[in-house]
Amino acid sequence: MTPTRISSRLTFFMKRVFPAIWFGMIIIVTVAAAIGMSASHQMQPVFVLIPAFMFVLGYYLMKRLVFGLIDEVWDAGSELVVKNHGEETRIPLANIMNISFMWVTNPNIITLRLRQPCRFGKELMFCPKGMYFFPFSKNPIAEQLIDRVDVLRHP
Image (cartoon, rainbow, N blue to C red; front, top):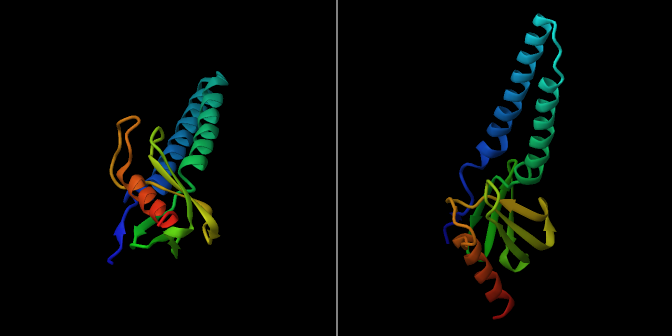
């Protein structure tokens, strides 16, 4: 079987480009505000506290939702081919213990919990391809994986 990509092609943008834009803009705004305040000799702590809060909150959210995403996930039939940071591993579907889909986050995330950890850990998160905006709707990629893993558990 020819592997089919089931992860989003926007993962690189979400993991690398967006955080650089986010943190870069906060730094630029903070520096511009500091220069403006020093030129007018009026210190306003709010112009430092709000960007600092946005920096910390942004880092926390990105660490929980974005930085841990797997770069690529490919469906190869009885196993998934997982690529992250230039490394590749194969995960048999029988090694998947649980599959969950978070639709309330941006990006949407599928989490695979493994019976035996692989080189990337015991839990693997990736963004499925396609956009899913409808609350409480089922993600077709997650549903298909759940069905296939269930068939392996109960032949």
